[in-house]
Length: 241
Picture 1 (cartoon, rainbow, N blue to C red):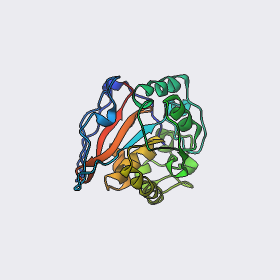
Picture 2: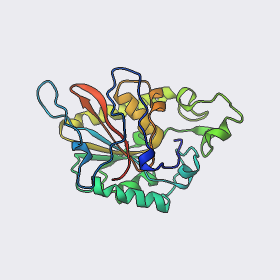
Picture 3: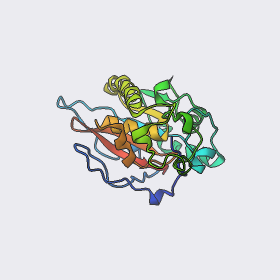
Picture 4: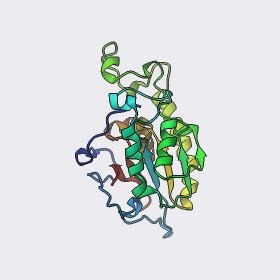
């Protein structure tokens, strides 16, 4: 993922989205300590008046490479002290929240974030890993563009890594696995920056390139849900309360 340094909570903004049909809150939701983010908005029901579960997407805390803006996929880094502190801050929202399942990327930065946030991982899933950047692993966008000035991950993928089409297939498979779980309740997914953004794009039935419009900081919470029966982004890029 293109791991960027975490921004100050008050500066995080959701980018306005032009594609339709997509329902997006136009600002970051700042969550009071006593409030569960899943209930920050009215829960959706389908046409049979059945409450539908939501997907709580947790991006892992800061690493040394994310702080430096270096693409990090297969490199298995630990969290920085700041990343650990930010992950612990998520406990105020997540620790006592019941989830029917908690799925995590197998990377240490994701598993450690789940642990510090008070989540009990029920399944480690390879489909929740970060976009594989191939030969661009560990490099910043600025560095890559010194030799490939027009390079765009969302369009081109990484040489020797995953293409956008391959990421689409992987995340569609992952969502197909999650959807039946939502009949039972909410699901948490602990994952990575580009993967989370692409996952949200596919949830709202957009190409993965739509994720380019979804800024996402480290140690943030986002909610994929529904507006009636239509998949929507119920909350996006919310920092710890």
